[in-house]
Amino acid sequence: MLPRVDTDDEWDAVVPDEAVMRPGVAALCTRLGIRADPLTRYPAGSQPVYAVGDRYVLKLFPAVTADDGATEARVLTHLQGQLPIPTPYVHDAGEYENGWRYVLMSRLRGTDLAVTWPRIPRADQDRIATEAGETLAALHALDPAPLAGVLGPGDWAAFLDRQRTTAVARQRAHGLPELWLEQIPGYLASTAPAAPAAPAAPAAHEPGVLLHTEFMRQHLTVDEHDDWRLTGLLDFEPAMIGQRAYDFVAVGLFVSRADPRLLSRILRAYGTTFTPTELLTHTLLHIYSNLPRYLRELPAPPEPTLDSLAETWFGAG
Image 1 (cartoon, helix red, strand yellow):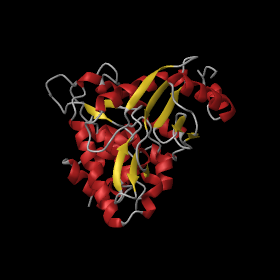
Image 2: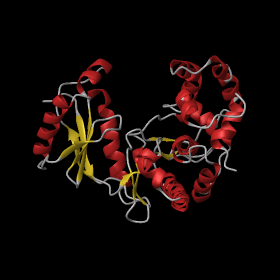
Image 3: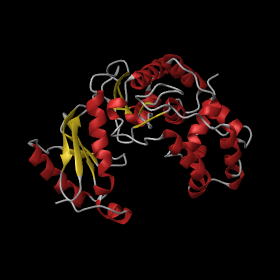
Image 4: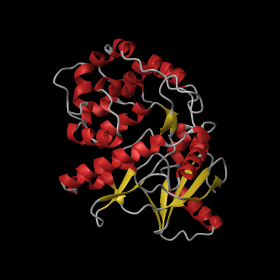
C-alpha cells in the first residue's frame, strides 16, 4: 500500500502526504496485531513516526533509508536496560512492503525536552545537564564490539579524512560566507584528531565507542510531573562507532547551547573534558554539520574567527 521511495523527489511526493502514508501505516498496524486508533504522527523528525495509542511508537523507513531502520532496531535491542534512563523497547522490527522497513517500539514516558526546556526551573535544568552527562558516559562505556558489523564507518581515520576533504564544500552548500570558509582548511590542518582503535583491538589510540551522534534536547524526554526527571533517550538510527568527542558536538550545540555553566556540568558528570578546539574541529567534521544554521541560532563570537567561535560555543568556563 505504501509506494516505493528511492529518490528525493519520491520522498517529497510520498512521505509528507498523510493521504498516502496513513492508510499504509494503519494496514501495518493491523498486520502487527495492534489497534491503529488513535494514530498520531509526530510533527518533527527525519523519518515518518507515529504514536499508536499510549503504548507504542511506529517508525517507518522507506527504501532509500531502509538500512537506518535495521540499524535503529539493532542498536535499541543492544541497549535495552543498560543506560541510566530508558531507551525504547523494540517489540517488532522488519520489512514491510516496497522496500519499507519498520520498528515498533515502546512509547517513552514524558515529553520532548526541547519543547519543555523554557518552562524548566534553572536548578532542574542543571540537574538535567548532570543526568545527560551520566547517560552519555554510560553509553560510551558499553562494549561496541557486538555492533561493529552493523555500524559505520568502519575505518574512523578514513572517515575523518573524507570529512576533512569535503568540509569546505559541505559548508559552502549550506551557504556559509567566504569569510568563514577560507579559515576551515588551515584550522582542520592544525587540529586533526587522532583516530581511535577498532573496538576489539588494543587501544593504540583512544578506542572507538558507541556514539549516538545526535545527543540533543530533541531526542531526550522529560516528565514535568516527576520533578522534571529525564525519562528517555531516543533516535539511534544515525549511531556510529568512533571518537567520544564526536558526540559532544550535538551536546554543545543542542543541549548546553553555548551555555558554559551547562556544558561544565555535563562534562563533570561525564568524567572527561574536551577543549573548545577539539569540539569545533569535530563540528566541522560532523556528518550533519551546518555552520550557517548554528550561527543563526547560537550566540555570535566576539571576533569572526574559528578560534573565537570555538570558545563561544564550547567553552566550559
